[in-house]
Length: 147
Image (cartoon, rainbow, N blue to C red; front, top):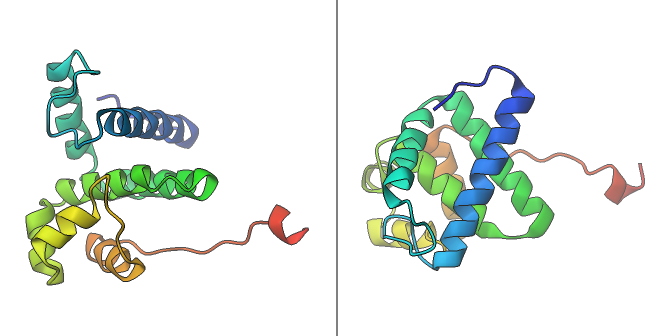
């Protein structure tokens, strides 16, 4: 995978990546861990996914990946992209089973919460983010407040 040095290029790459993964996940109606008939090049995807997980071991790229996913959610309220990004970062940091053990969350509930059918509680997302080394950040929307 190519390394981008310019923030705009990296952000654009992450947005495109997130859009592709979200579209394919929603289109297939299940996780990428299974073969998806809409992705004819399953080996290319497998190589891509492995490369993505390896790159998400970089905390700065993982932070940007999650930030873009959360920004996307704030625009369209589609939680699937954010849950997918959170799951990818968790996989990059040792997997969901390890995360469940480190957070004392039930493994099956964690898998379910971060699935594309998941509806995790805010508390669960906060615990997961904290264990992965991140936190929520609130910022004012100027246009919403008339300023």
